[in-house]
Image 1 (cartoon, one colour):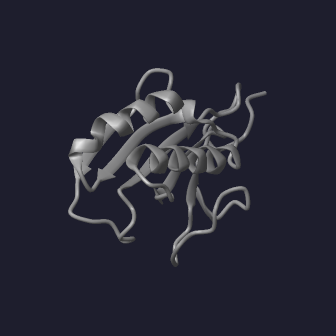
Image 2 (cartoon, rainbow, N blue to C red):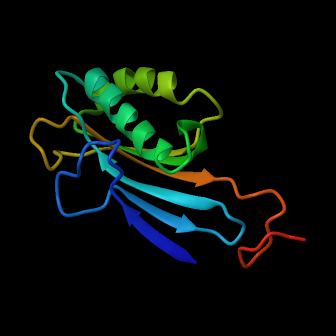
Length: 138
């Protein structure tokens, strides 16, 4: 198994000493992508959510994935009363079968202006004909 940590140029730089993406390469050529929690600027949860999903999309694209590849999403809201606003934006970006999900209310996030933080895990399909060990079947 190979693990690569990355900060793709297509997405905003991390706000601290962490990597934006951990790519776990699988034997069949596929990969699991673990994305760090994202926040965004904006006056309300809807605006921040839109910015977050745009950043998540850019990070996934840099690794050959899309939002359709998301298999798990975790959401941290500072006010659970804004869940409907967030959910409406989420439905704009995650249009297929919903991924597994956890949503929790937290008293605050690491930036005082942040109302929401989202992290995801995505699965990138392997190559057809790949076999365990990473080689192609003959």
